Image (cartoon, rainbow, N blue to C red; front, top):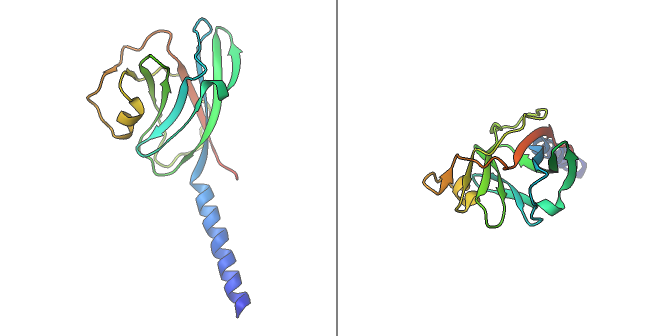
Amino acid sequence: MKLRYLIHITLLALCTSAALAGDTFNLFYELRAPKTLKFDPLTNFDVVTEDSASGTRLRLTKRSEEGDFVVFADSCLIFDGHKRRAMVVNIAGQPSQVFRLTIASTPKPVDWTKWQRPDYTEKTDAMWTFMHDLKKHDRSTNVPPDSFELRFRISEHKP
């Protein structure tokens, strides 16, 4: 009798872990900026949704050079069920740069996107206003020419 319950519990655990693994994806991203820019190592890169955020500091990313650009690379996990996602670049003393991410609520693997410029800059707390979908804040679509550019790819997460 105990063996029967043990088999059921084992099957339930395996099915549950397989289902949860299917809801998780890797978001690999690169942010680049002209080499002529002075980079603050405390600059934050945050992936923001309507109810969460995950980020890192510039100094903790992988740094490389491509032509006239410095490229900063990192990755994070993303999950099913988020309606809105953005990358927020927060540089001390400057407006935040906000990139809306075109990722479906249920992500699918995609190869590298094209480089994109920020959708807007914001002087107030860009993470908070994006999370709460607040529109009437100090935003500008007049993005500076020396802003960061972003590209990303998505793959299934294999634990």
